[in-house]
Length: 228
Image (cartoon, rainbow, N blue to C red; front, side):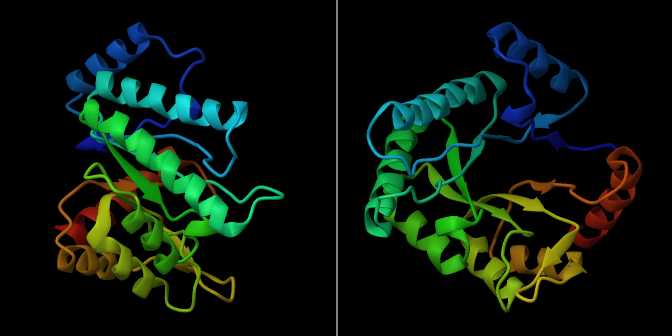
């Protein structure tokens, strides 16, 4: 597909991840002319202090080290979810403190953390950005997933989050408040991101039915035309 970059996601790495594997992957990407545009993890900082929370924090810190080896400038992260017996206000404090701690560590490695709009406390643009503004770090921003806002005006939410975005993942379809799926308007998304001054990577996150190896080349051509 003559891509410019690739975003390898932690879920698909061999376990355990070794430095040798990361170095080989980095070499392979370079040989193919691919930047490692970023990577992604599945953390949950809604847990109270204890073993589970520490495991979540340590896991993200480990991936910050992996990103540093790969040369990935940004990691897609989550806030997490409210746990039973913990208030919404306390959950928010837990999420913000966990993100700030990891941002401090990420900054030491020259890696950014980007919070995805991924349900729970990041369901709407307002909720997402309230957390982003509370996390005090120059190494923090938004990972904008165009398919994860489901309000009355999906494109308005995307436009609100776009100025804070460090990474953008484009999906082929959008789902509105009524639950109906509709094709994403790539030219409109491109216009929103240009108006926001976004200059980072545009990542195709393909979740449609069918073989992605067959379908994605055509989608990439549409994206190139829209974002040219």
